Amino acid sequence: NAGVTQTPKFRVLKTGQSMTLLCAQDMNHEYMYWYRQDPGMGLRLIHYSVGEGTTAKGEVPDGYNVSRLKKQNFLLGLESAAPSQTSVYFCASRYGGYNEQFFGPGTRLTVL
Amino acid sequence: GENVEQHPSTLSVQEGDSAVIKCTYSDSASNYFPWYKQELGKGPQLIIDIRSNVGEKKDQRIAVTLNKTAKHFSLHITETQPEDSAVYFCAASSNSGYSTLTFGKGTMLLVSP
Image (tube, rainbow over all chains, first blue to last red; front, side, top):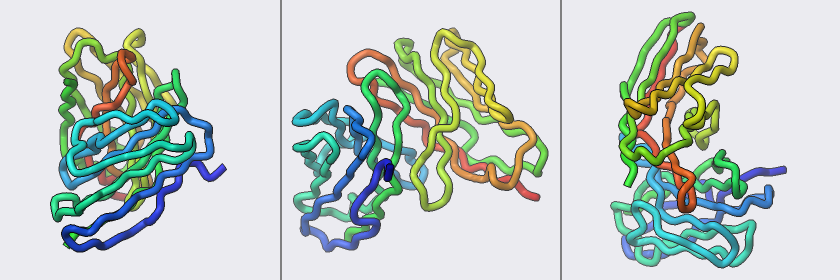
C-alpha cells in the first residue's frame, strides 16, 4: 500500500495563478482532510470530507475550494493564488469510527 | 471552538535525559488526545494517543498523561535518543460532529549526543 500520496511535491506560482493539489489514499478511508502548516502556527484545517461527494469547511477555508468526486481522491484548489497562501500543505485520511489520521508527505507551495 | 496550547516551543536535552511536553485544551467535550511526531521534510506520524476514560498510557519509552479536570495532557519521553529529535504536535478532538483535530503549535525537540 502506498498510503497517502500528494501531487505535486513542490510548486511555485505567481500571484493570481490557479492550481490544484491532488491527494490520493489507497486505504479505503472515509474521512479526508487538507491542512496547511506555517512556521510557528502548527497545522490548521482548511477543508475536510466525511465521504465521497461531501465536503466541509475547516478553520481557514478562505481562498480554497475542494472536491471529493471519488472516495480515494481529495482535491484542493486555489483559484487565484496569493502570497499569503505560501505554505506546506498536508493531506490526511482516516477510517470512520477510528481517530488516527494518516498524513501524506506534503506539498510545498510558494506564491510569488 | 477548541483551542490547544502547547509548551515549550523548543526543548533541548542531552541523550539519555527525559523530555516533557505539555498541552492544555479549552473544550471540555474533547475526549481524544493524540501526539504526532514530524521529522524534517515528512508528514506527521501518530506516536501515541489517549482517550478521556484513561489517565495514563505507555508505549516503551513514551507515555502520555491526561488530567481532564485541569484540561491538560503531557507527553513524556524517557531515555531520549538523537533519533527522537523532531517536531512534536499535540491535538484534541471530540467525537461529536465529524471529529476534526485541533493541533497545538508544536515543540521542536533536539536531543544532543
